[in-house]
Image (tube, rainbow, N blue to C red; front, side):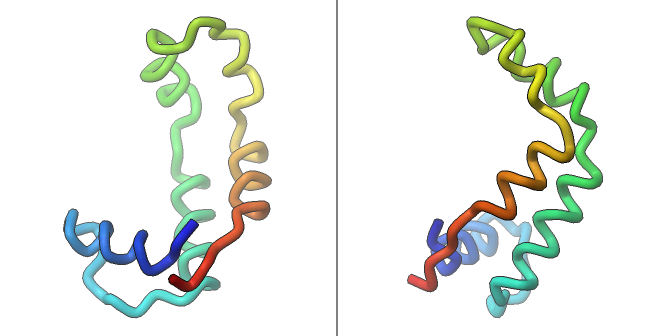
Length: 76
């Protein structure tokens, strides 16, 4: 994922005020958001769009943290 593109979109949407965001800062914010996520509510929100709702059983905070750790970021 392009960190600079993310920063541009986050600024446009008003979700980010500071245009300088380092990769460690981004990752910290991402993990904080995952910690605050109501996973059951998220499952309920998306379940109507998923053909096999059993696939959502893997949706756990630990699962999202692992995905975040594996995320590869590019500068440009």
